[in-house]
Image (tube, rainbow, N blue to C red):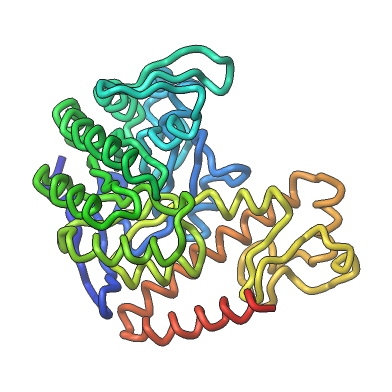
Length: 373
């Protein structure tokens, strides 16, 4: 593997907002970047061809789900995750930790790992740091995440225990990880507690990962608490490594987090909202099942260049939605993915142009205005 891979280079900066590139074996990732989520080796209903046309440069898949079905060893036999799902660009796999810890009554945690029951059939499984590294190496994504424990953000005692495990597991993951063509990222935890976040960041920096994630946010804390944590981690994390805010994906959060030094985002929101009949617009979310749209000849959003808006009316898409036609979910997904990917494109371009603060002010004012309606 070339030494040029897994290096981060910053090209422009406005305040703490950074524009750069993270290099991987399957291509460069221009940052800041939004990664659509392909939980089960597919961004629901959207072919890789369309993701490429939409401008996606990074896709996330889920270790927990792929381990259970179809199995990481099967995927390895099929040539790895890139070949299996037909996506030639960079891939990121999470560790499955968040999914396991969200099982609540279906899992038991100890210092060695976590035992859990499958949500599919109730069968018992065990994740250890070593097991998760084996799974992620079988999947073969460009970026893999360490196994961590995601604690409720405001529970101090739980976060102290979880942080100790997270750090032990990070060391074990690093020792067990052997693929030189895969970057292993550490995950900063610690809930909303600044001293724990600082402790976590400093511990993980000493392990010298090629990138760092900020985990345990967007899971119940306030926006102000999230921003406080990001302000702190921005000051602590290395300038020459990418920073990844896990599971966050709204336009408002993009602006706030990019302005606090974050480079990478992922979220299921665009396709999940589409499956519930909702579309992002600059005037707020639109309910595509609304009766008032039945004779509306306009696109979802006027001026939008996405395939859905260029070819179909609100009235037609509403018809598809209420008729439970799959095409309706596809068109809404295409539009929502375009909305977020294009927002991130504008953010990146504004950092190069030196106009990020003006764009942020304009967009946040619009978002505030629509939320007050």
